[in-house]
Image (cartoon, rainbow, N blue to C red; front, top):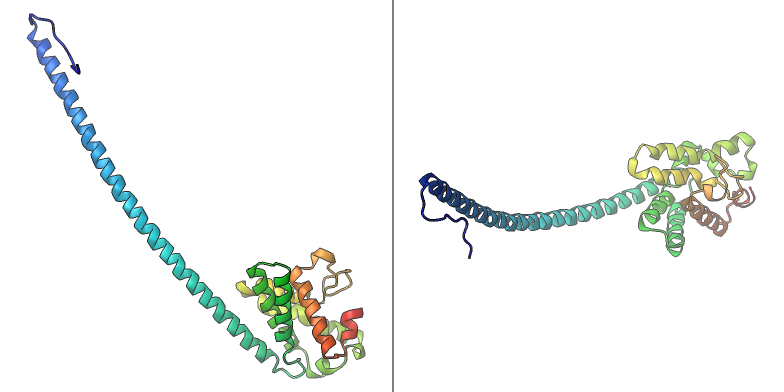
Length: 231
């Protein structure tokens, strides 16, 4: 019936009665405290859940704002790179519009191949800054047909890809694009420069840029096309 203890009458040992009563009160108090603790715990859990929900909502909002900021920074970064590309093409002997053409065609190819957004953006940046290393070359060298250059001059010309990588390598967000610029004269058969990379050793972005660059040179009947196509 829910009794917590019992005594047999007649009660002769009143200390036993006292002990029984104290035990019952102690148990009753424990049950009361447990009930109170459970209630407080439930209230705390409700409050904690509410706090977690608020914090989660704040975190989602913060992440959303960060995404918006990053998107804005990326947009600003691309615009800055486009301006830099135009400045590069102001250097005497550097083909105007070549980088923009290569970047646009390379992006189309990359999208057709199903590359992800980060890869596509890296390819676009590399295309826009493809000629940055040529700023270290003289106008005379840049305007001479490639086949008229002697061996040393040819090496100096091809080295602009390495110089371009060096110029951009110090910027963390441009390191991948810088490597594509370095590899712009590599060839699938391993006969290219500067490292003689072969096949899949050449980054897919550099291979795409190479095709776009050759196509641009073909359209404009540039004399260095002979080297680009035949080696």
